[in-house]
Structure formats: C-alpha cells, structure tokens
Length: 222
Image (cartoon, rainbow, N blue to C red):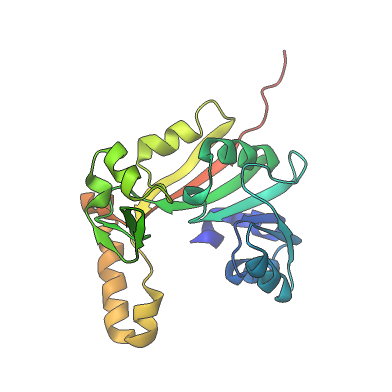
C-alpha cells in the first residue's frame, strides 16, 4: 500500500515522522536514497538508529529540516498524538518538495472502539473501549484527552489553505498481522472479508483513515 502510493518517490529522500523503534524506517532505508526518522522518545529513537537509518529527536510541530527537502513523508498513526495537529500538518507540507507526497494514517472517529484506552476520575483504563468515539466531541475528548480521532471533515480542515491536492482519501480496516501470525488461515479469511468491506459503505466503520496528499507546485507569476 505504501509502496504503491509513493511510486518512484520511494527511491528518493524520505522522512518518517514519528518512527518509533524503526520497523517501517528500516524497510524504507533499504530502498531510499536517504531515509530519516523523527522520534520524540529517546529510547525508541536509539533503538531505531541501531537498525541503521539516521534518526533525529524532535516533535512534529517543529520539524528540524529546511523547506522542500523530502520526496516522501510517512506519518503512521502519529498525528493524533501531537499537541497541535494543525501546526504539524503545516510543517509536513513545508518540508515536502513540490510533487512530494505525504502518506498518512490516523484513527477514524467512526471506528466503534477507542483503541488507546480512556481516563475516568483521573485514572487511566487500558483497552479497546466501545462507543467512546461516538459521544459528542467535548465528552469524548474529556474521556480520551491523550489522543485525537478524525472525521474526513477534520482532516480537510487540517490541510485547508495549504498547497496540496488529494491523491487518495479512504478508510481502511486493520491488517491484523498478529492474528495472521497466530492463525494463518483464519487471518487470511478475515483480511479478505475486511478488504471487501472497504469497498462498501461499511468502510466508514474502519480503523484508520488512509490519505495520500501531494504538495502542489507554486503558481507561476505571469
């Protein structure tokens, strides 16, 4: 999916914004002319760097790179954790070259479960909690203030007035690699069913938004 969305950009300069322990970054580094990871947590950044690629510390709202640097930027379930997601979106587009692409995964508010747990009376409760994301926004955010979720309209607002065009905007179900690893036959059947559902209106219940956003070239002055 990432390779198809990236096209030849996969062989250029790539930034993974929020690379974690470097699982994706290592694979990108095998193909890219340059692959760099950004990670806010020191221990994770160190582990990612131990796998080979360059990793720098930082946050998404202040990317430590010049404008028009990268051909491709991957943000996989990261944007929902930043303090200011609009500023993070501005920074992403700033560091992309014209014609460069953002590959973005973020949680879908339509998914029936909040996968990051919730807070109740200042106590955190871990787990996949049903229906929290269907509450009015203020109530939902009071229960899960540590993570955001998005509708299509929310994402459009994030990138409004920025020099971008949308290449792909879809909602996907999870890959469920853990189930496939433990129960290969069951997992493959499940994945086939979910891929089918992604082509129906039930896709609105999917786990994540998958967007491909391309930075446009500046308008020529006449």
